[in-house]
Image (cartoon, rainbow, N blue to C red; front, top):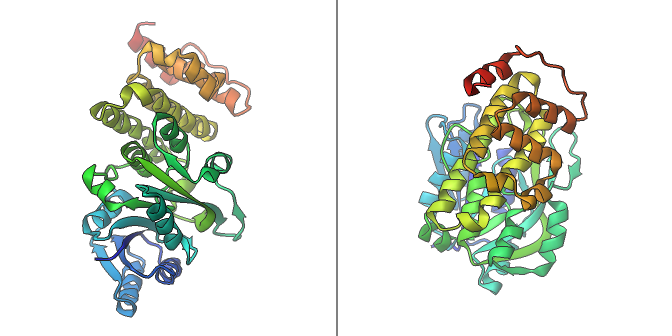
Length: 357
C-alpha cells in the first residue's frame, strides 16, 4: 500500500499534462501512487496519460469514455474511490508542483498528527508566465506561521476563510473514508468549496507548510474560472448543499452566518463583473440563498460587519424582492452610475406583479 495517493484530474489539457505528471513523478517523496483521471478528453490527453503510465508503474490511468456532467467532481470522486494510500492528495493536471511538495505536506501532517496539511501557492498567467499572490495571501500570512491549528470552532472559522482549492492540501485517507467526503456532482463549477467545508468541519487538526510549493495556471483558454457567464452563477447552488450538510451534521447554529458570509463574498466579486443581461439570473440565485436564512441572520450586525454595507444591502434587496434596488447596489459596487429604470422595466416589473407590489 502506498503512503500517498495523488489524484490528478484532467480534461483537454494535452499541452500541459506532461509537465504536471513529470512534476509529480519527480517528487522526492517516492512512496506514492498517481491516479490520473481523465474526464473524456478529445484532444490527445488520454494518449499522453497512457504513455506516462508506460514509463512509470506508479501511474494508474482512469480514462472516462465521455465527458461527465459533474466534470472535475466526477473525476476527483473516481480517484478517491480508487485510492489506496494512507494519505490522499490532489493535483490539477495543468498546474506545476515543486518536487518537495508532497514530502513536506506529509512530514507536516505526520509530525503533528494532523488530519490535513496545507501549503501556499502562486497563480501563474498562462500567456505571460507572470506570477501573483492568490486572493487569500493576507489571511495566509496571518494564520500559517502558527504551524498547527487545533480545529475548535474559532480556528475552523479562520481556516474556512482560506481558498478552497484541494490541490495544495494533503488529507488523511481515514478522514475522507470515515466521513464519506466527496465532491458534490452536478452541472456547476467550484465543487471544491463544499469539499473544503466538509473536510475542515470534520477534521481535528490542520498543519501548515508555510512555503509556496505549487503554481496554479490561470488565464487559460477553456478554464472555467476564466469564464464569466451564466454557468458561473451556478456556484451559488453550493450554498444550499453546504447548508444542508451543516444541518445534518449539527453545525448549522455555529456556522450558518459564516456560510451566508461566504455566499455574500461570492456575490460581491461576481456582481461587479456581472453583465446586464445576467442580472436577472444573479438576482434569482441570491433570492434562493437568502430564502434559507431567517430575518435575524440577514439583519445581523455581525453579518454586516463581515461583508460590508453594500453587500448587505444586496442581500436585503433580494430578500425583499426589490430587483431595482439590487441593480442599483450592483452599480454602486462596480463604481457605475445607477441605471434609471421605468416602472414597467422588464424583470423588475414582472417580479413586482408576482409579489403584488
